Image 1: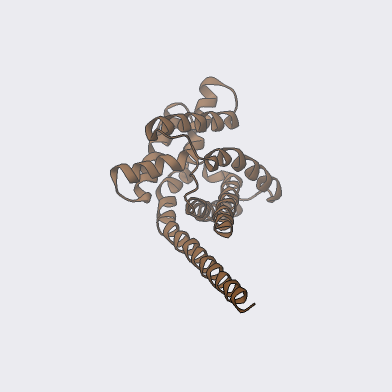
Image 2: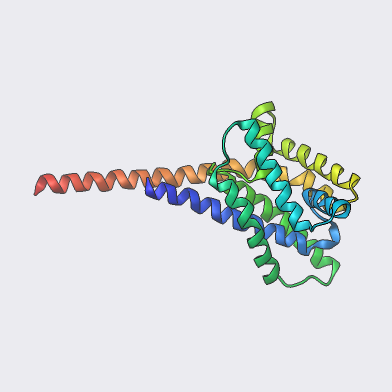
Length: 222
């Protein structure tokens, strides 16, 4: 069981780091625009003040509160870790990545980031240790109303982007691309990582059973 626990958290942390790398790549591909959630964060910053980063945290806390009341259960520790770690990972990767000084590189950064972010999102959700605040909303929509992850993500990000735009946040072609296509990547990637994790857990269980059987045989022989 200890190895199963390790594998689940490994998928979670690696997936979180990969998703953060994708977010950093999108940030570097700034010429194409920001993500739907950042449209909202910038809009709130323009209307009220504080900072974009502060609104990222505040909106995350508000979503945690709302989903907690809806689900009637306290968020898992992974949800809180998501809020704390993504910002740190994004800052690290943004510092490491070379700055883009041309439109072609911006486009490369953005498209690569879109794919990497979506893959990382699917990987960190797959152990079901607890999704981040925004991804929790997506999963609730799927479980409550049915449909696909693709449609749930598109719906939430479209609503958020429109609200942010009404508050004065910037919408670019990249915003539309993220809202339209991240769900298409996450949809097949999530079951892939769930099966991969289940396979690793099965292998660990079989190895444990074989090890225990060998130990019992050795005890009987002695």
